Length: 342
Image (cartoon, rainbow, N blue to C red; front, side, top):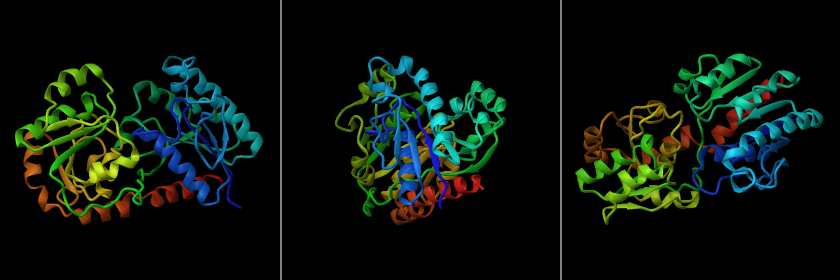
């Protein structure tokens, strides 16, 4: 029999997400993938989560959608949910806990007989590193090797790259005439750099994603909007195929050490090459000259767009299918979690 698996998620956002939230999407994909493979899975998440796993909740809906909780008070419910999850998992007979709230579960991991392994969705802060160093009983999964550089006190036992749904992300063999930017609208995501690239080239740019910083949007994005530079707002997962697939290239000029840019494999799955700044996990995800170009500056990004026709779109698609499929990701988690129960 396959081991019973407990999955602890954040109570803050809905699972799966309604739009572009990457962490909640990954939680859902891992959970549903393990259930399809016959694992007995309990998901500890908000009551409005949609899942085929056994669901255990402490609130009827995600904290962000509850005016009595919201962003200001959600941390208290993370601890309430985590405490309830460990108590229930012990009674239920779970053999391993996969935590998506590592800085909370770290305080509980040492009190159980079953192991806890935590997935780091973002770069750890200095405070996070202190928590990890103080709780050696909890092991960690990194989503890129680059992510480990900021968490030297953590005990990593695997790096598992995120997967994307290559079945729903349709391959588009013919390039479009516009550049695409997909991501949260704020400074370190590089929207202004994408706009500067498109303006210099006089090539249309379509921007999609939630506004994460209203002041940044008002200063750097809104004044540039016209027939050439368009902001489409936040798009759903179902809209990504058309948005990314019909682009000439996807621009990814990040200004931070992003541990895993999900937009990269999503774009490749659609056949669209990516031009990205050399930060974070980019060198691990993108093959320079084969699936796109890795650059350091806006002038280099402009030069890369001019030679983007050298990148074969079918190569991009095959790369996504080989390295970034959902099946590969879920298989990696199934093997690791099974191993931890032995």
